[in-house]
Image 1 (cartoon, helix red, strand yellow):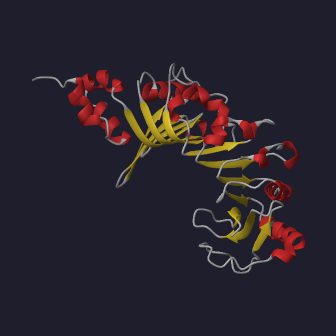
Image 2 (tube, helix red, strand yellow):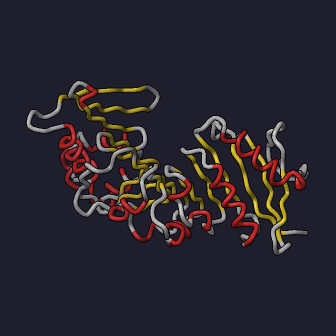
Length: 309
């Protein structure tokens, strides 16, 4: 019986979802020897210090699981298998071995969305591991921590979600070139110098501090320095009173600029005021309103720069 050539193998396995690919390859020693030179395509890859997920296939190893490595596959039904840690390895060492087994030695890994979860300090990446990604989610961590495993041809990113760090954060080429930027605000407003000067067209802020002063700083920056037409910044917060508090401030500052914003295609929260604030150059205006989006349980404050007619 003739064995598969590389091209035949690539046709068979390259675009299989990771769970099916792992299942098939694990049952054929000949395929296993060749499989890592075939590009791997993953829609969503998640990495933590005790967790790895490739679409429907995930692996967890933690003391919380009673010293077991949990393998889980989700297709039409959920399948879960537990295996004990190797006696000579700790949970973190076991995770390192799993990363090496599933991701190490691969020549090309294409990922639509890569997510780095929680702790990153103890992760040991396989040698020469590199991802070609469209979207990078670093959570509350600074995206720069992951440069070593992201291929340069991934930039500009379609989406970047990151914590903020450094005075010149807003000047980073990676940040400024991201098509959609999501900033996790995990620092007090006085530690976020310059971030209100971001020039991206679409930015979402996920605020863990309820930084009303930060929102006002952004509005002040726009009033003095107009942005590209259509530039949109949005703000959500884990603080329950964030929207109420910021709307109270805006009512006091811009009471004379309340506006129905007729013709704006948004699902406004009907009980919240809307504003149309002119900038100093009188060439543009700032729309300010609150929406309840499907993607977030929290209401969202939106600032949008539009050219004056």
